[in-house]
Length: 283
Image (cartoon, rainbow, N blue to C red; front, side, top):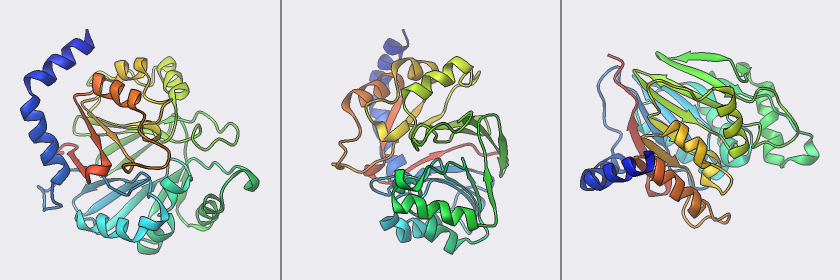
């Protein structure tokens, strides 16, 4: 029933949807109304970096790969961010945390939220180990997990996963959280797979009354993510896959994309350029 309704709605508004996608992808970083918040899925190539910008303040979720770090800083500033208040790292794989080094140079006072996961050095790359060392030395780092909350610029952050750190797998222990602002909710899945999606459903962590505005799809749209039951539950308006085109891993998986298209009104890919979506005016 959800599938048929979604499909019919997409058929009826196909032209409007095409215009909307075009507008979202090419939106310029022009000045916006005071109190408005924008979410930008930045085009950082093979990785993820999500910026929330409001009134000159910024919250960055993940920092993309290391070779895109200088451009990442320029992109953040291009969206009017003068002060980066908060950096949330879902986990320390280089495609999510590689830009950490440059970001803390540019904004040395930034507060960092992470999961505190430190697998044995022999099980991780040098870049991941070095990122952990930066976090150990940084003055403002908070480790969080399921059940904890934070507030930024009037937005409420609720951390849903992990309940506890288990084993060396960085992906499975990724932070999963929501950001809610002015009646709009964004769900960021890090690199978790369907096992965690189903655990969150069993816990009732995804039971919301007013639906989901944006889903940042888990693990770049890989095969074992965005399972049918999960997507039926959250039924996002916008789903975003953060990855570059023709990447070596073959992401996103075609079946995953089909599921996202079935249960989302719009599906965006960051390789088409920055994806800019309003997350409420706050007025």
